[in-house]
Length: 60
Image 1: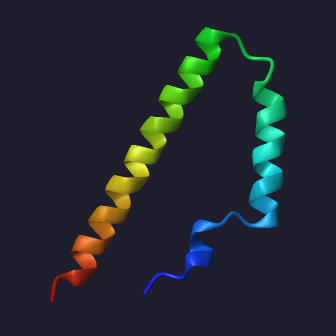
Image 2: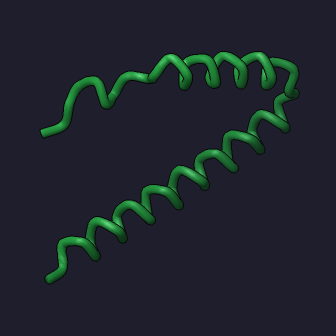
């Protein structure tokens, strides 16, 4: 069972998010779109890795 706390950000993560927000406040539209696309690609790769690890761990 998944703990609801797993969906909350830690204090450190909140701080990192705030730092990123300040850093990216200065980006223009093109830079923002590029950053978003790079981030989405990294998330997709991470999801694929997790899926693969889970699939392999379930095999006998």
